[in-house]
Image (cartoon, rainbow, N blue to C red; front, side, top):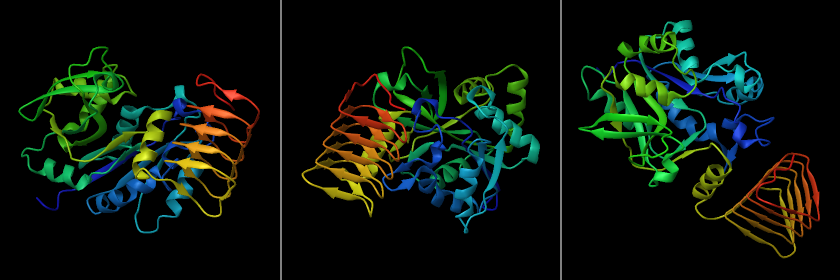
Length: 337
């Protein structure tokens, strides 16, 4: 029982269009949150999971070299990179398509843990594995999280639970019944793996995992695991900044050798190396490398690398790399590239 094999798939094949222009030339799992990439946060979990089985990391051909570079720096864990041929959003395999493809390509027949490569969470996946092993025969397990808001729940797959199992599942409902949502992390027993091909052969949605879970819940009993801790889906600007604020612990991080000159107000922000801040407010924001900000206010925004911002106010925006912004106020509905 203790030697049971469990393989892991980390899904990172998307193009993160809701975070453009930040993700136009950068893989979303390599976005930095409070000093580390999203994949860096996941790495300790992958080290532990590698003792149970193989680990596969999917990406697309556009970001393959970036992901490969990150993998090359991880010498103590063996992660197999799977590169999709897609070059844009409409060409990608999709989450379910990618899992099904890996099952077929590698003849996977162990338990299978699937985790989204753009999720940040504080709980240990060892708890999920222990929860899964408590059931015999093994049953699929979905990791759930209570977002605490019906309005926020509209963006996710929403579930109701009865006696520890999923009673109903609805993908992005207009009127959610609960605020309990699917995190996009699942553990499937070997007996369920053929269901992926069956679902796709029947015309199922290749990309939205929630549609597959809804379909599967009508055919299999799916248990719900709700761990203690925090969870962030880095899907857009708001969640990216919220994750930064949480992992910063309410403080700010200024990487050396960034320079801070004059009178500044820097709160709950992450400023990366070689940036220069002078006589400015940086509030709840992220400033990437080699960026200069003078006499400006940056609030709830991300400024990409190699930018120059002067005499400007920017709120709730993403400023693309190499932007030059002087003497303007950037409204929330405007993105700079």
